[in-house]
Length: 170
Image (tube, rainbow, N blue to C red; front, side, top):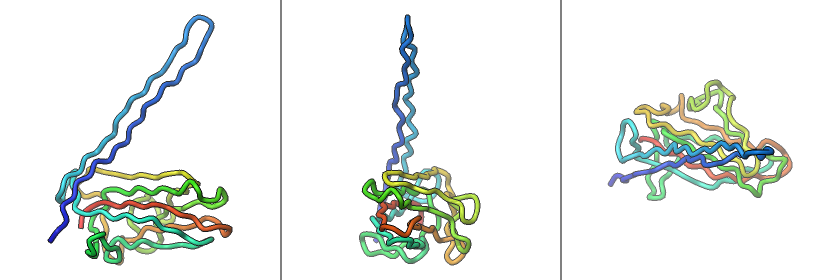
């Protein structure tokens, strides 16, 4: 039996910036909503699988998440993503300030989430990274040639914990 999936990803920016002057208080208000809703299926604005976990890396440790065949859903199904529609990574606020969680595209078999091999983002304690797309194809995942995302603890002093959420098509 196949899983039925729906997901709403909400990114909303709400803020006010003001400055008090002698005779007035000019302001700038911002209210932007970048919500994406994904229905069940394959195609534009659709997905049919997600995977999530909280993981810990020892000092200076590295791990590759293999999106094609090594992850298991909460229902025990082996997941072989063919398209990545989104990823959210959150570095735990309790991580040591000297240790970042680096998320990168490995040299061999990396998902083209980032534009170049070894490029990525470095997340300090409490930082988050999100990528999402409603595009029909998302980021192509191909077993053995484009199926890895690398996570590295940036320093050799303490372990780091991070949450990861992947969604797309199988």
